[in-house]
Image (cartoon, rainbow, N blue to C red; front, side, top):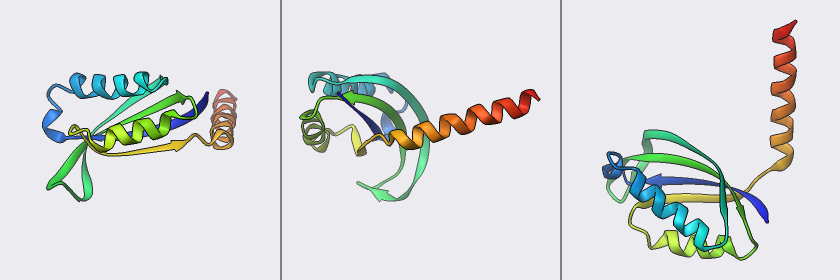
Length: 113
């Protein structure tokens, strides 16, 4: 299983009941054989340009663990899902994560001194 990062832009009209579209996204990931490691809701934000005549979207970020064939299955399903305006699924940069963790640890040490 490889680690991936997924950012999903959910239709802004679904903000009131965000659980339903997020459950649908989670089910798509589980059906492809993946697991959601971490999830972070960034909230409703203005888009840089209109997508499907929408100026806003709800941003949700997820860390995933997926088997090799899952990204293609997930991409094909998201392309025909009405709740998802856009998505970005990329491999996680483990070197960058490690560098950020080391930077945070050194910042914590400096604060303690």
